[in-house]
Image (cartoon, rainbow, N blue to C red):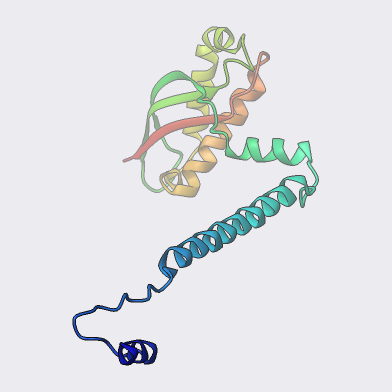
Length: 184
């Protein structure tokens, strides 16, 4: 038996007897625990950094000072214009003042545009002055030549009609005149 004890001490196995295996400490659980703690610390660090960055930005003064004039100007720039009210005048046909060859001009759908909110009494005045307005338009048309058929001529005619009508009006102004031109 002494031999057996000697062999056991030297680590040799005795026949018929199994030597109990030394259990290694389970390091897998400890490693997982340390990994989770490290992950929580990293996440906590990220949250602190993001929160402090947001706090600094919310506390810091804005880059530009607030200027109400700029805001109002931007709002006016981006607002769509309110539609103007239409005052239909009618169609006109007139002989142009061309000397060499006679031409006729036909103006269709002549419409005066105005702001009914700004000029509340203008609609009534346009109705009362309808015959005067038509006479003024006819007088202007018979003084024109066939150049009225060009883009420049049409714009000049619109401007002249607008100026003439606005000089007649008391209760408001016409910002725009629309029509179609046909010269024959």
